[in-house]
Image (cartoon, rainbow, N blue to C red; front, side, top):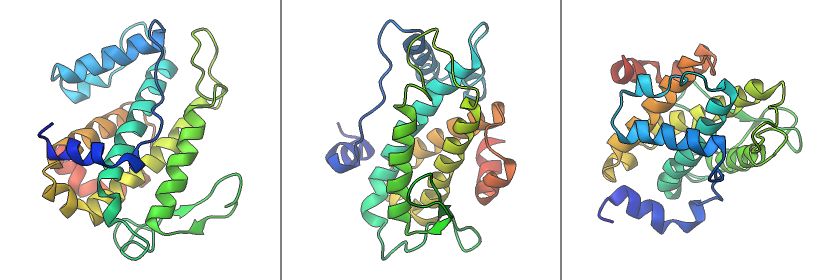
Length: 217
């Protein structure tokens, strides 16, 4: 394991969360394998995110949301030791963008939090969503809830904020670890996916607009 990015990931046990697995033999497992095979084959990311003929959009989206959660979680984990209450007292993306936390329980009103606190709440919240059978059903034939894509939009918008914070405030750490290419590929994959299916409001994408235009167009 000579890759410094992977070394850092595997050394930081505390950043690992239970990965949502797709059970072998299920339709979603097959979709997950197909999506991974496309990436491993070096297929153009723009093409790799397109819905395969005959497949259900919700299934395709569910597979990718879980995958993006796992990947973004690992990316943040690699820089989390440099993202502290002191270094990042506000969850932000530069001076123009501040992100406030809101949920259905403790924080019913948008609340300013430090970046590490925000990230912790965010990852816990997403984990609950994707492990809830009523939101992300695993059994083939079990219908997705009517508000599934609405929930997905919220998850992906919030995951995008992790990219914003990491790129704007911690990119030197990413570059220092030699994992810039890996993170850029993850970001491009994410960007092409959310724009292919209009899953994030274009206003949310503003903070990384210049970088995205260089990287993805």
